[in-house]
Image (tube, rainbow, N blue to C red; front, side):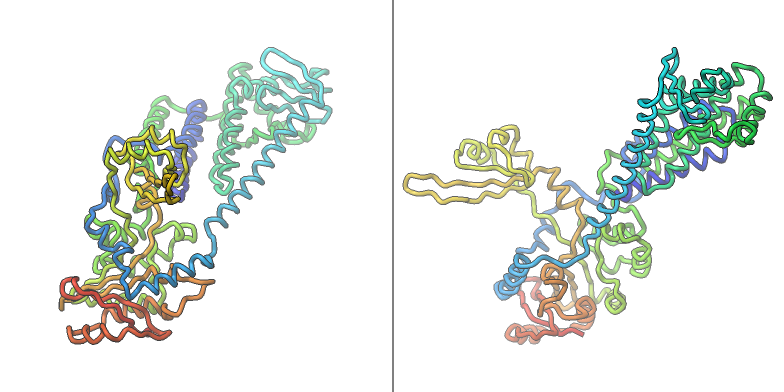
Length: 563
């Protein structure tokens, strides 16, 4: 969503700047009207458009299939050892008993947006109701091109859709200048109100974006130019019409404006525009430039493929720096030696709160932790450190005969993509439609009763959305050493074990700084590892680590003190 708003706003500003610099002063009003409407539509759709050229910044970081090698390498199940089972049970029990205490930023921001949407929608509806009430409560008179609404109030004519609002006494006495009436009739004939209604709807939806107000003002002024051009073409007396407009605004007539609630205009700009002229060569050149600018924006702002919120991975400098440090072929492992940590921290601090909440997490920017992380990075290549994100489970293929057996089973229920379906609906699918499945017995069978089963299935699209397009979580931190051993810290314990915002006893204060400090300074011989295998007690200021030796064949769990 952030990428959509950002790129749409960039496109809107570029189009508006081009309009203000080159088009607004030219007598090409019909083209300008089209340009403004096109700019609005194009800017809102540019991110969804496909560009024939394969012009993209960055690479496709999300292959369709995940190599099983790294998928199983950091799976949670492989990190659960008999000596650690009690620790994991404690975490899971805490999660069931109490939820994390975190600020729901997404919910808060959505609440603010919906509140603004409701306010501006109600205001827009009230304006429409006021106009409808004026039509209903006053005398109306149908004509060929419009329906006159005769108002008791002292006002100059204005229009809305096919209604022309005029002062009743002036209309009956025929004292309204025919140029003014023709001007307003032009608004009706050219359907200018529909342009404004379109913009008003966009203003309601994107109420937080002031760019749409600029477009509304530009579009209203362009409508006045179009109507003025029609009046001059009909009556052939530009000087008299200019004096009429000036006379109305100067206050010599009743202090009434010739603008409507949906057609504000700048009289000074209109008077100046009536004296302008544009050459055909110049207008053709400007039209060509606008076409070139549209192509430029399409290339640099479109997705390059059918839009998906996760296909544009590196949407800011922070994400680009992280993406550059990913291990080749593995979008879930960051190699510390490839990271420009200083630039990464600077880029992160420049993000706003919404962008931070939607970005790939890297929770190591606290001063002490960051200092230790920099020192650990400098220990490369003696210490090769990786930050591992949670990786998706390996896809499982459903055998055809198994799928058919499910369909024939009576006491069975199906859930597809977390949605329970009717049994008959499963027949619409093929085994190849699914990436993952689990089968469990929900009710045991008896002497005269067959067991019941539940099958949970996940389609390929849902699999990609759940595991590749969703926000990642840091799973663990690993360091490899020349002496044939590797140390892993399960960072997921910290997030999983938060209880009312307080860390449990097995997560030391300065957790991140302690991890990076020990990964840099740890120096164990094989004898140390053997002795450590028998000393696994820990106090409140320690945290668990896993140590792999002998090419990963032997695993030792121990505890290291916090700093």
